[in-house]
Structures are given as C-alpha cells and as structure tokens.
Image (tube, rainbow, N blue to C red; front, top):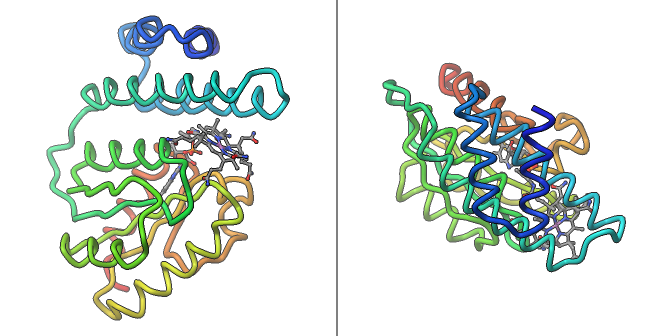
Length: 216
Ligand code: B12
C-alpha cells in the first residue's frame, strides 16, 4: 500500500496524469479495494502534498496540479465502486460558504451513492439559503456537511441550526466531517449534528446507522 501511495504521489507531484491514473487503477488490479485506494492512496497523498506545501518544499502551483490530477482520478475511481442493490434514503451534501476544499466531500458523495443513497452533491462554498432549498427540493433524509478549515466551523453550526429551525421534526439527520473535525477527533467540536465520520469508509457505516436509527 505504501508503494502504491508513493507511486501515486510521485506522479501527481510531477504532473503526470496518465501515471497517476495507472497507479490508482493498477492498485485495483492488484487486488486493493477501491475504497482503500480513495483513502489510503489518494487522500493520504493529498495530506502529504499539504505537508510539503506547508513546509515550503513545493509551490502552490504544484499543489494545485496535484489536486487537479486527483480530481480526475476520483472521477475514474467512481466508476469502479461496487454498487449496492439496496435502495437507501436521499442525501444532500455540501461544503459551507467560504470553504474551498471539496475533494473530501466529493469522495463522500461517491461512497454514499455507491452504497445505495440518492445523492445530490452541491460542491462547496454554497450560500446557506440555497442549501436549505436544496434539502427541501430533494426531500433529504440525510444532510452531510464537509468542513476543512477550523475557522469555518461556526458556519457549520449556523447551518445545522438553520436546518433544525426550518425543518423542525421532519429535518434530515445531520452528518459532518472533514479536516476540521478530524483535527479535533470530531466529538469535541459540538456543532449540533447527529454524527460525524473521519473518512469515507466510516461515513458509509455511520450513514447506515443513522438510517437505521430513523427517529429524530
Ligand atoms: C487541495 C488543498 C487546497 C485546495 C482545495 C481545492 C479543492 N478543489 O478542493 C485550495 C488551493 C483551494 C486550498 C486552499 C486553501 N488551503 Co488548503 N489544502 C489542500 C490539501 C493539500 C488537500 C485537501 C484535500 O483534498 N485532502 C484530501 C481529502 C480526501 O481529505 P479530507 O478533506 O480530509 O476528506 C476526508 C475526510 O476528512 C472525510 N470527509 C470530508 N468531508 C466530509 C464530509 C462528511 C459529511 C463526512 C462524514 C466525512 C467527510 O472523508 C474524506 C475522505 O476520506 C490540504 C492538505 C490536507 N491535510 O488535507 C490543504 C489544507 C487543508 N489547506 C490549508 C490551508 C491553510 C489553505 C488556505 C487557507 C491557504 C491560503 N493561505 O490561501 C486556503 C483556504 C481556502 C478556503 N477558503 O477554503 C491547510 C489547513 C490548515 C488548517 N488546519 O486550518 C491544509 C491542511 C494544508 C496545510 N498542511 O497547512 N487548499
């Protein structure tokens, strides 16, 4: 797995798109689960990109390049996710206003859709009022919020409050995640959500448990 990640990281840092695609798809051919490729290869490679950027060892241009290639690879992996036969509920997933990180949210959207949820992924930096309208239009059973920057956590709380106040007893269950929550172990950031999950694999499990839980 380490060698898969290193090969992938080398490719994205060098801007070699085809090599990056081959590293990810090759890992699948060698028997790696596609969800593990998302998390242990792509996600961990981007975390390393972040560390290299923070340490001044790569430029912003290289970080952008690596991220853009990863978005292409995510789109290719999406086709490889095993599809559940089970029909689950409806999901709206978004990032808050001012938050530009969206790769993690994209992965969650892919994972939940493959697990049988009917997903509307809004991307990120979406005005709160529009998010509420999207929840109403899709009649969401589950609402997911992705937040990377700690400074945006109050916006997550505000959005959760707005959902509770607009939809009352019939509100969707609320699931949060992203770098801001990972950094604090999730639970210590009380934003009023029903649950959080640290990564894509856990998000599938937690979303199922919220569905089974049913009542609000
Ligand atoms: C790519 C990137 C960017 C890109 C994002 C492009 C895009 N389209 O997404 C751009 C260039 C825009 C960017 C900008 C900035 N960035 Co930036 N960025 C990154 C980088 C390198 C990778 C992010 C990423 O995609 N990670 C991979 C994904 C898959 O991981 P993830 O988001 O954690 O998602 C997983 C889980 O968290 C979880 N999850 C995510 N969402 C959800 C939602 C739900 C509901 C659930 C259940 C789970 C869940 O599941 C996902 C999959 O397993 C990170 C490094 C890092 N450690 O993440 C820095 C990083 C996040 N950025 C950072 C910073 C500082 C910035 C800027 C402030 C820089 C600046 N001075 O301008 C700006 C802020 C912009 C803004 N307003 O948001 C810091 C944040 C530090 C902090 N703790 O606050 C980091 C950590 C880099 C660093 N080491 O310093 N960035």
